[in-house]
Image (cartoon, rainbow, N blue to C red; front, side, top):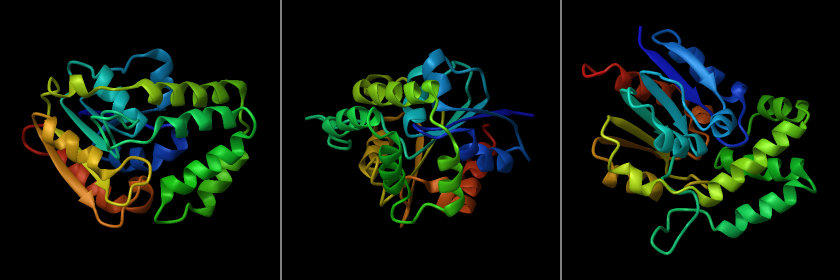
Length: 226
């Protein structure tokens, strides 16, 4: 049985990717990792397939294991911050402000972030309760800061052309965190990619378009050249 590694994005724990892991566990040996874990270790363990997004997507393209067969990128980008030659990102001043605000009121930063993550839908009551029930530990606070600092400087555009494995890009047209233009840029520059844009989809595709996302991932991973 092929193995599948699922990596979460910034400020998302294992509970955020567990439903996707459970759905794929019917067909694959699944392992879950947080983006914070990958960032701390600066390494990704071997897996036949990797499914990730957002910050996890940047990490996957930067640290991709050589034996990985296929990659699925949800709501991803090659560079998180906008630049003169890359308009598909967030102004760096926003991340710098978030870092400063985290030190004063981390709950407020996370609440605003998740509001934008779930746009144009609303975050579920269960998701809010899970997040509010968690105490922000010293380690988790440092993970949040380290993640934002990584996003401030990350840029894997030069690596993209060398990633020759098949890649599935799934992106919401209404994404407020990473514009869908970032996925279109990846599709244009990756040697072997398929792009699926979801109408009415925001950044949290697996939360609000679960069945569609799972079906697309399964179909892609089960293709005869897997």
